[in-house]
Amino acid sequence: MGKEKGYDLVLNLYLHADGNTFFFNGCTNDPVVRALFNDVRFRQACNYAMNRQEINDNVFLGFAKLPDNIQDSEYSPEKANALLDEIGMTERDSNGFRLSPDGQPVSILIEYPTAAAMYGVKQASELFAAQLQEVGLNVEPRGTDDAVLTERAISKDVQIGAWETYIGATDKDALFTVQPGWTLWCPDWAWYEGHPTITEKPADMPDEFVDYVQAVQDRVQYQPRSPEDAALYEKLLSVYKDHYWALVSLTEVPTSKIIAHRLGNVTRTGSASGFLRSFEIIYIKE
Image 1 (tube, rainbow, N blue to C red):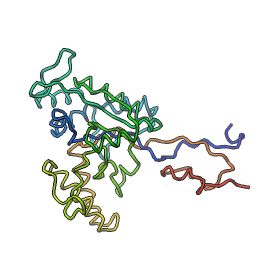
Image 2: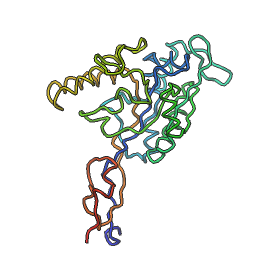
Image 3: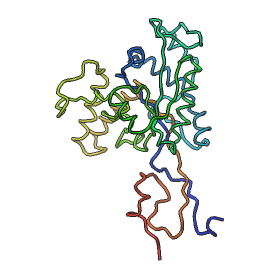
Image 4: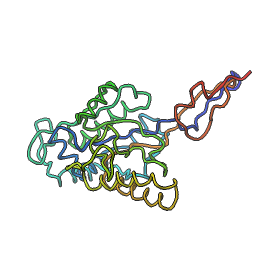
């Protein structure tokens, strides 16, 4: 029917967005939440609590893939609960939510930019929050205006920031989701030796972040995918996999596109960014 009407429906194009990622801000202002976020067992527990297939089925109609190439995608509430117990979050409040190891209430906010609704981030955040509640964590999702969210991130008020996961997150040329200086993470943890503006290493910057950011900086010296670059990438990936600072929900989310036959220079396969939709690139055929 589409061909008869002068257009094609394309289903094998990966355009700009690639699922959603949840960033744990290790220097958030809330001292109770900050202490938990800086315990790798807590971040790992949250990873086990994420039911990626449920997010896939409900947000992306089952078309996406699990991020097994860059992160452990096992869904296990049992392992999540065991890790939270091991941390010391064994006591609960009157609503059944876990208290901190020293008995304080814990309230965690997942924030996402309201303008990113097209990427499924609202629905994914709601589902992930509900999944964390199932293991006893008091987590709520909230949409925030983009400008306000940026201000909150810079001032370290964001706790878990949610955003789309670019195709580059799974590519050897870039692990976008773990770029130092990304505002939904700790804005202070972008230090490396020789940084032009951050002259001293932040006192609370974890050793794995120091190694990670330095490796990102060192990659600039080498040709992409050269042996030296490949070795640094493997180092980055190892830190990423072992420490769970960002949790990728899904990857390889296909984007449906309706392309008129009159349009030229429009890609129909592969992956690309949103710029290809601009009229400086495509044209109307005579």
